[in-house]
Amino acid sequence: MVYKESQPLKKTWLIPVVLVLQLLVGMLGLAGGFSTEQPVQGWISFGIVLLVTGGLLVLFLSMRLETRMDATGFRFRSPPFVNTWKKYPWEEVKDIQLLTTRSFGSFGGFGLLGWSIGIRRGWNGEWRYVFSSGNAVRIYLKDSRFVLSTRRPKELMAAWEEWKVGT
Image: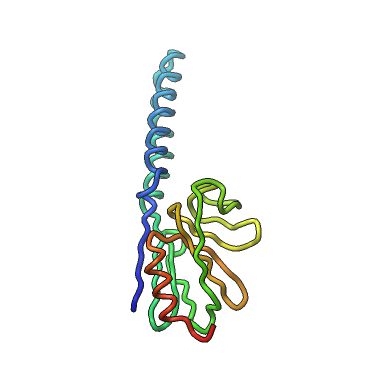
């Protein structure tokens, strides 16, 4: 059994929030610039806001988490930050445990997109790649561990049962 999953970040609540913030800050920038009778500053501030939030929107739309399990082992990547596949042969994977997440604060730590969704390093030092709320798995390796979210937990655990080696 080969397990493949791709979780784009664009299927989260984050994109509408960024769009609304972009609209509000842009309107404030325009209103503030024009109310001071300096229309050039209004257009400059609007352009800066549009450029920054547009860049963030493009970044969020391009982010995804891809996982794969097959006979060679477990691997994942998360473009545009982790572009090459991180590969772990089955001999290195000790265990995979299913976790249930909540939308806010279930995996604390410093991260790219704040507290609930994104790539972050947890308080205990493990890396967490959480692109959806609901379910995640903790991968235990011989010398470390990390967390990946999943939208198909039953299929992932079925693939793990088939491929696990000597645990």
